[in-house]
Length: 375
Image (tube, rainbow, N blue to C red; front, side, top):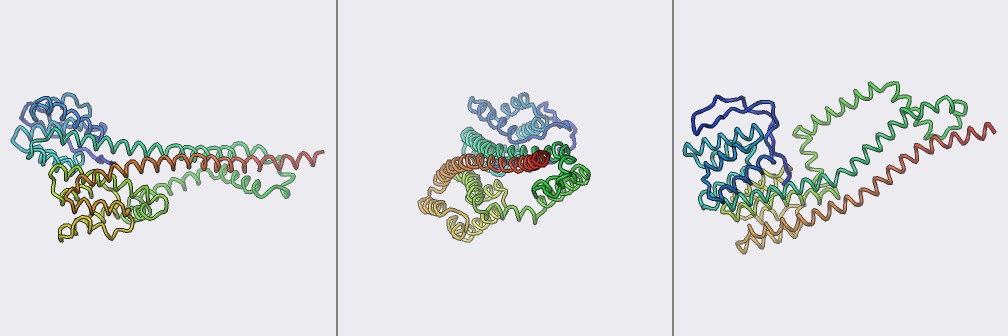
């Protein structure tokens, strides 16, 4: 799950090589290959292998069905490597921006064990679960963000368009105006006279924030807040648990070593603090302490998860137990996000109502005072 698979730049186009009649040039300037292309590749490959097609034949058939130019070039290169005698896993490993270490390790295990079709279906199921989680997160955040943007647009419109029309009218009773009206009229004047400076300042602030967030210190600070902010902490911990335990379960259940499985878990999680925790688990396993011992001192992991992992390790069913834990916390996460979304809607509407109420009252009260003065 979560959920970032992409690259910044395509490789320079290569000269076509001989081998199976495959053209290895990659057109430049097209959409980058990503998770959707990987899911299509995995689904088609699993289907073709299930029907008895050879690996090379399946890959060449997928080339003709792949629309994304970059992904088509990658599949062509993998097919060429297979025709030259390389293993499928090593061919996939060359394209680590598309195929993660989890994907490569599981394919390697399936090549040895002869159950590639089953592993590909499991990888596809994991991809689909990740996509479902991403969709759930986006859905939970969309409505509150829309209300924030709409409220901001209403405030700007009123200050820039509506308030100036009342400026001359309110001038005669300026000393009697409410503080809110004076403050909003001052803000209106600043926005109309210095809008270019405000836009420039917002642009500079946005660039500075972007650079800070992409810096090592900024990213580390955000990662810390995700795991230590009350309310948000439980959500992010469950997200990372679901992501890592799904990979751990899938890897262990298909014969991947514990160390390779933990490394794959570390690759899928994008939080530096959680990755450090997983690195500590790897160190614990190397020292003979086990997975549960490496998690024991964690301050943000739920006790239930620690206890179940310890039980699974003691009984030799860690892969199965990790899968059950991920399913449990995935369900808990869906309920929590639904609850947060339902609470956020009335809260945002209340805030929006207060903002609009302040704007309206700042206009109406002075008008009442003017009408009394005239009468």
